[in-house]
Length: 151
Picture 1 (spheres, rainbow, N blue to C red):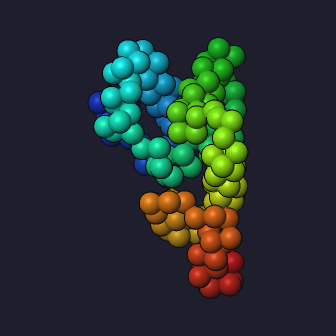
Picture 2: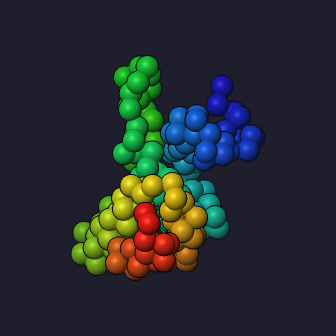
């Protein structure tokens, strides 16, 4: 069963099984959101919503772009990806508003840049991801340049 995703502590991000855990945790979260009455879901979002949760958005993009079928069945693999893009859509709802699309695009660039970095930047990357607002790509780069230039 998947009940351990509701009751256990999350795996440490350094764990070798973390990506698999994150993908399955996202799938369980999506099941929960999709099974809620829309009014309950709206109230939950209002009370516990984290639309600016840069760390979670980063985790989702990282899991989404690194997800591989491996030894999973096609159905299982599809379900995991569906869960990931479902939660990404929760944080970045579809819109025709150009300003919102531009902000989402800029966030994607920053998240992709951060996800491509070597482990030596981990603490600075985590600092960027915990800021109230994700900086633009140039600000993120400037922040990371604080590390000695041997890297």
